Image (cartoon, rainbow, N blue to C red; front, side, top):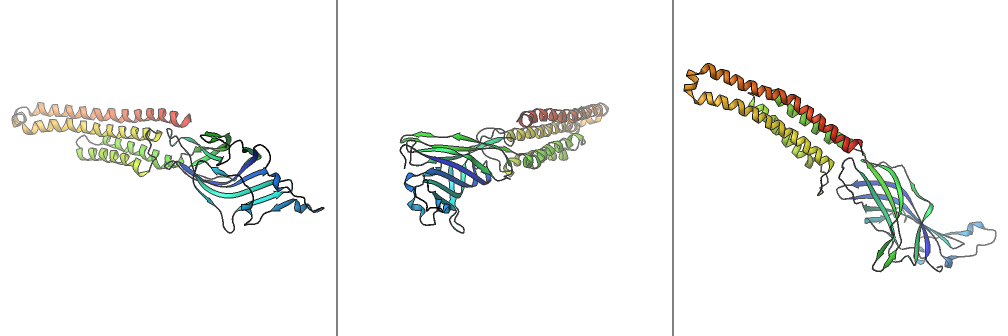
Length: 338
């Protein structure tokens, strides 16, 4: 080894990004990890006039005799090397002492996500490469000239916007250790949630307004519609298996909006039903009022019925208008401005 820290140049070829999960806060990557450094002890004199001998490719079983950096993935949960049909790694030694080391691996890496704007969020998932036992006085990590190469990625429900390179060197009780970090900037594509959650729940809210168009005496249909809509929206959160976090997400606000509108429709139906039923009850339990004041009672009942119908008429206009206004505010905050 040379005096001072050994410079190890790193590069990554990403074959695929997959299994991005907001529930487990992780993602999977299949990649080729490439390392390039100089070891003065490995210099050799090539045979004259034979340029092919300037590079030696080591065979399986001889790699353990060569020093390689003890690089590991700092945010790794699970990792596997590829060994089909032979171990997928390559080690070449140049006559100048330079060493080229490449290995293919698949790893599940942690990605701490912030889901305030879920499902309109953007996330940054890191790939952190650090030396396990050599401090910065022994090893220095640098990026290759073209450090990152990627195949075209299809990873619904996310879209890869860009990647960035960061120095993540950290100080521990045993010293400072070199680390390089590759950040994947991901943008969630909300088409799935739009089709499977937002549109269905909005339609459920609109269906709850059907009660406003039914006869005020239709107690059972009005109350049944309201109860079914409330219970259905309440179950939506569990059916979609949304991530459980301690703070409010954008999708929780939408669910609360829909729940408030359906509960409001149910309460309106209950109020209208109560107005009509009370007056019918008075007329039935008071026979004297039935006999002596039939005409006035009839006028009173008709007046109360018209009052209930007026409430329904106002609700037919007020509920859709308020829902439209709330939608404009919601989609402006979470969708247009993201």
